[in-house]
Length: 128
Image (cartoon, rainbow, N blue to C red; front, side, top):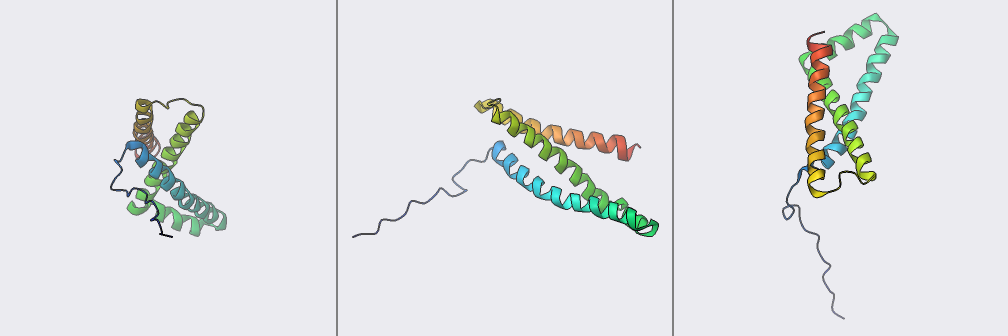
């Protein structure tokens, strides 16, 4: 009895990358990043509960250029993941499932998340 070779799945180099594939990966990555960002929030709240010295130290760290960069990324991840969830909710209700509509929703997810992040930082951080 001859052993038949198992069929192989196409390699990633075979597939043509699309925006919906990229947004799927970003949705998973931002979900993971939100765990780390929530830990930063817990650290900040714990420092506030511990006392003025700990709170000042955490605020100094979060106020540094690196801390601001991390918090900016956390803000974008929060908006991007939320909008990705809304996009999936629409798809669950069979809205936006046509080929052109899927790509439009994926691009809108990316663009609106960037715009919302910039607006929040402009209003509450850079101007305020």
